[in-house]
Length: 127
Image (cartoon, rainbow, N blue to C red; front, side):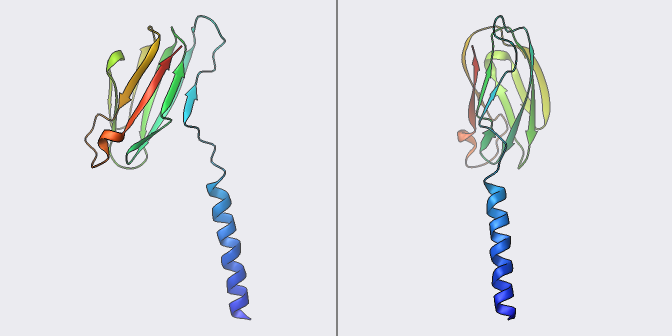
């Protein structure tokens, strides 16, 4: 009887854990919520950094938007640099800039964080 109860308990716990893994609200792309047009809004974007990846990996804003970019380290110590906009966050921090030129700009980890450091990259897309 105890074995049957234990099996049922393990099955129920496993189903709960697996369903929680599949219901993530996070996205790999951050987009702005401003009205279409000149891009006069302020976009507040948080990028989470953990061992060898950023979430989101792609950020989309409109040309002319003011961007408030926050880096949050969720695992390890990382930075975030967007050289084309003179952004270089070390560890947790916030930077503000105006996305005044359209194009696609790479960002990367600016704190040496281990063997996968060179893979910590993403893109800022200014439309």
